[in-house]
Image 1 (cartoon, rainbow, N blue to C red):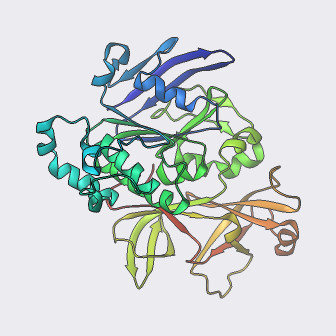
Image 2 (tube, one colour; image 1 turned 180 degrees about the vertical axis):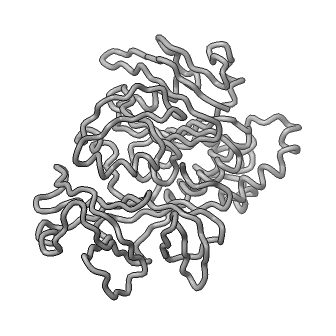
Image 3 (tube, rainbow, N blue to C red; image 1 turned 45 degrees about the vertical axis):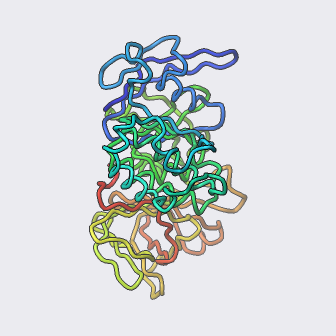
Amino acid sequence: MTIELVNVTKVFPGFTLGPINLNLPDDTILVLLGPNGSGKSTILNLIIGLIKPDTGSIYIDGADIAKIPVESRKIGYSFQNPTLFPHLSVYENIVFGLKKGDKKLKGLQIKNLCDSFGISHLLDRRKINGLSGGEMQKISLARMLVKEPKIMLMDEPLAHLDNLTKNKLRMDLRQILKEEKVLGIYVTHFEDDVYALADSVSIIQKGQIKRTDTLRTMLLSEGESATIGVRATSSPSYSHESPTSLSSSSIFEIFQGDYNYLEGHVTESKDGVTIFMHGAHKFEILGDYPTNSTVGVLIKPEDILLSPDLVKTSARNIIKVRVRSISNISYLRKGVLDIFLGIDDISLKSRITVESKNYLGIIEGKYIYAIFKATVPHVVRNSERENMIK
């Protein structure tokens, strides 16, 4: 299943969306990232058919959706607030909308979905009163997925959950979408959602898509963009948007890249410590994750220590990198610098004071050691069945 938007516009009083051009291949998860009022939800409403575009066309698998009835588009839509029926049981909520015969045929699928979301123990519950926000959202998502949509549109469905529930549900949601081979479009203004969910990212501002690219490309280009301005390059696999000049200040308002993201293949896991490989580089993190699975982790810039020399330390992660650029970005407090580092296809950012930079003799082009403990990375992705982001 593919989605293509070609020169789509929608005009409202005081706001114009578009023209929007997107081309999403099968089994992609696109995160639409932008501030409130930028047009993210409008794009979803156009795809689902709640509103019609003023100009342009939207295609699903090459067919113009104007010619496809809404009920035949095989699209699921999940909102911020889960809509459950209080007079129905948990099971009845999940199977609501299925034909009687389908409920029996899909018995195993329903069980597997509930197992994946961790809500199997709720299936016999007669009332939804007293369920947590996370449980209700999982039930709502399961109800969408049991109908076997080919596309899932998600309008910040995790926004009102607590952080612990949100972090777990993000990983569950990505893995389930991949397992079910569902194309997903996820709307958010939270940067954490990008790292946990995205294959590709579209940054939208004031009704215009400023940049569409793979998550990996976004992150790898960050060090250079911080000092010379972001170039909005489009990936042919994901967008027909024409390249547009975008200043570093405007893109950092939306996608600050304020974490380091590393992803790799687990080679060993024992005694509560996991080793994964990112290219030729080995990293250690806390936790037990299956060998041959993929993990993705976030690291705060403040947690990456720098040293001009290889030193003895209890930290398990030491990597020799080149200083790509040094930036005093406007949103940081005075006297603090971002040090952009890189080696091979790894891009990292450390945050230190001006005094520390001068003491360590850090200058652009110099090779130094980046150091962080195994306790520092926060796992946001883990899957045995998906490939690393391209």
